[in-house]
Length: 250
Image (cartoon, rainbow, N blue to C red; front, side, top):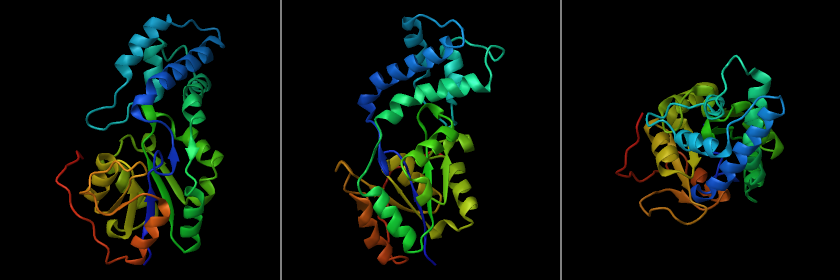
């Protein structure tokens, strides 16, 4: 049986930003959400207050529960549920994500590699966290924009589950959606903690992709590009991975 191929999105299939590059993107994202609110005639706090509240929201839950973007924006802009509806919330989220989507770069090997693996008979899926718990529907649009939807059988984002990787509910949902056993699933991601250890705890075969050459040598297998995954697949199911001594919360 050919394994199911699951991929992380950011820095695995598409490049977005590094942690140190996020502050100016966040500022632009908040300004976009502010404009969306003002366009419907609602008042917004001063920029200094927006920045102060955003700093309090700029973190993820330690237990990996999703903290939805909609709720964060309501708190930052001091809005109540009686003042907003689904249309405004979606507009705020879309405006917030615009500068994040603007910096996206699909890696040159992504579309050709996924196309090749699909032609070889592999099922392909995407399993990804989203920044600030942004809505899955908008990230599905992002996949379509980059031509990834047609090369992917299923895409799962953390907001659909309520938990972020490395929490196990995300991986378990992927297994249910593909109706496969953990040992028949190969997961490729760039984050040792969120992707590799999370997948390993789920019983999947984890492969680290290190496009920037920064990985600890203890991670094995480790690839630098998606076509290199083909060599691992040639050895499937006899391929092995070297254990690490790190842990991940469930």
